[in-house]
Length: 391
Image 1 (cartoon, rainbow, N blue to C red):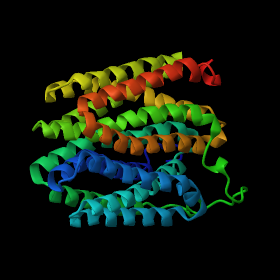
Image 2: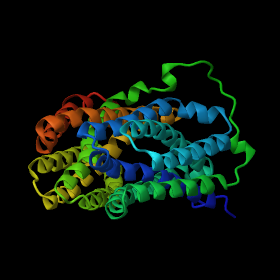
Image 3: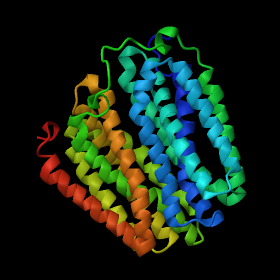
């Protein structure tokens, strides 16, 4: 009866579990900079480094996660990754120094990359063969909801109950993931690795060269996005309006979710350039508006522009990265794009933190707007004209 069923119990459980893991990341992205600067006497650079250590862990693990998942029993990998996730989140309850935060964020990045990757792989495996494409798109909804809830929950919990309660809440939620994701029956046929025809290690197992132009665009947008992720909560907190950060990220993410169906239809009907141009322009306008915003309300009002722009351009680059390669290379092309995105967010957190310390937040956002103007010019002059999908 359930042979063609999309929303199976297994698919829902993996989706919810993956969404909770994403939520923990968005909670910490929003709340941890405030903890570092307010409770641990850290600087803006320290707040940026916390994100960078996470990204380093994610990047290192993501390079090997696919090969690890395909080469071992997937249920064992899932149990190991979720158990480690629970332990690491529990250790946050005992952190009293910046050094401990940095170490845990690095380990958090490793288990986050492994856990979310194996859950996504298992979700695809339990989908009906003729509905895998539809199911993969639906699976993304869980991370989108996490993007809405995470920052709002993090900033509210921190402002209302403090960091101790925040860490305890995250520990309980990851404990739920440990139970929920591992209670799903999975056949040995799906769990066990398939014999591989490829022996040894080659760069082509990790990088798809045809996806690199779009990965470069992801590099630009990820770099500037890191400034929004890390420094909006700090800036609002410095204005005495830290709780407003939850509203900013909620509006940002809601605009992405609302616009996703329209963007998808326009992409399919008219082509990617009709999405990328307005998306980049809106994102640039949002960054410029942040550069002149001086009150919490004016900062909040930039969220719709930034959400619409990012929500249009970033998925278009991701889709083009995947479409630029043969279907059998979809995994590698996706990894190539997200590797660039991870690297750019990690590097941006540090570089932009140094810039923020030197010139302030307004000039920081103006600088990122200039970076995106360069990206738009690069897309128009070179990438759009010299890639087959954009002829």
